[in-house]
Image 1 (cartoon, rainbow, N blue to C red):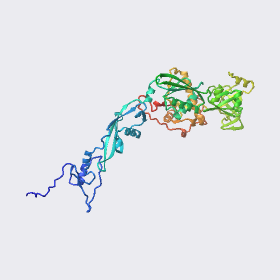
Image 2: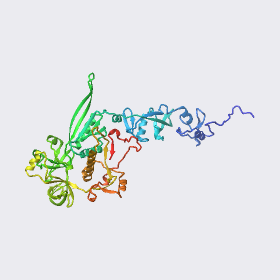
Image 3: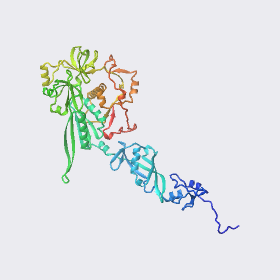
Image 4: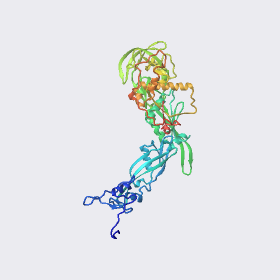
Length: 557
């Protein structure tokens, strides 16, 4: 039977074409594509369809008159966006280069790294970014993959959305700060901090203040010398700002000098290196001083024989006989400098026999007449002291023995000739040696230290190491006994304390004599005063370099 001439034959669509519009749309859909526009309906309520202008598939009406597959094949909205790139990474400080010369610290698959990579993509500003995320890669592969979903308007008010992956290669490059640390003689300015005393407790306190206020962040190197520390900086402004900080926490005087490195006579330019010498006053806490008569009158008539009770940006000297205190600024001291008669290394131990308070109080001190006995020979003395509210009968106290001394000081000779010299000057309460295990002191806290390098002339002799350890132990005891000192620095929890305490439970020895007993009144640092220690350095770093290797660094002790 022949087919009529005017009739048409319906043929089944092939490939992506289906019998119904819904099936055609489902067959043409691929991940990353979106529907173009909502379908329209006829007056009878049935969905209206049109044929795709490219392949003839029945689709819902849209402004492009094309199906999703044909539209994706015709228009590529990812064109012009780079699919690969390179990001530079410094392995010493774990920072990434943000062109042209800024280095940003970021971890793998972090928000900071994602923002840095998106800024590096060219052509991304021409489309709308819908979503971005990392695709997992092996950490050692030196590859970072980012999955992006973008959207763009194409043809006539038609939005097309696509998803693609961009791969970045991590290339090693040393940052400028690490280059200066690794190389020698690259500094531009140095600050030489010195203090001419027999111990290093003041330098240890200054180191903790620097760490708390993060003033070591601009240093490229820190070198330890016999009398202090040398801080090296890449610019003179950083060194000057560091000196301003030192003047705000310690009484110092500074001197600056510069050395010409090179000069160009044609352009009148030169390169110089700057050196700033910062000298701390040679007076430390618990030192005994004898002031000149003229200075005592200028300070309001205080006594000549004084104790240094506080060292900040000024020196606080207290008269143990009257509780009168005087603050001496750095400029006042260097205008008429004086020396110490006795330091904390020359203290003698006494035991308290009797305490008779006088009723006069000032700040945290109470004036009292105290009868003490010298521990070595039981010689008995009376002393007027400012420790009336601290000492009790049977306590141990440290003081200066002035019964048979001779000082090279005219002011002391005049004071001794007038008969105003006491036999004993009491300084602070003493506590029995504490228990420790063989692994070390059982303290639940620790301090951080600057990453310092020793000078070439600083030989690690045994007696010098013993003195340094003794000074450090004395500094730790000062922290435990002085709440004001603890408030000025940062103390961190020691995560190894519980294991150390467990190891030392059955193996405890005394620091001093075996017959000494632990004192229940010994001061302790409360756990709520401690900060949680956070270490970002990886445990498997072969070189042992932490996060702040380029900024002076911090080490636990």
